[in-house]
Length: 101
Image (cartoon, rainbow, N blue to C red):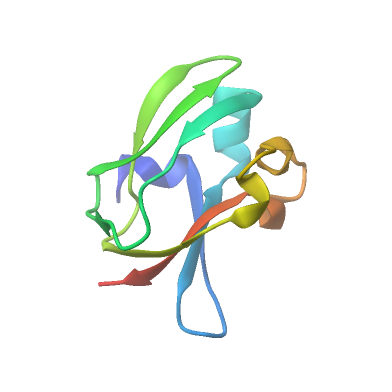
C-alpha cells in the first residue's frame, strides 16, 4: 500500500472518474493548509510519484500520488480559497478528479 494513502482518500464518481481528497489523518498531520501547488489537467500521475506541494501549519512538503491516472479536473472551489481543504467534512476536501489508469 502506498505511503500516500495516509494523506488522501479516493472515491469513485458516477461519471467513472475518481476524486482524490485530503484525509482526516492528512489534515491532522499537516494542520491548516495555506498553499497548494496542483498538477495540471491532463497531467499523468503515478503511484508514489510527484502529486502536490503543500504549505501547512505543521509542514511544508511534497505529497505523492495514491494512484496511477490522468488529472481530469481540479476542484474549482479551491482556486481562490483553500478553506474547503481545512473543512471538517471530508467530501469538501477533494483536490482533483482523475481517470484511473
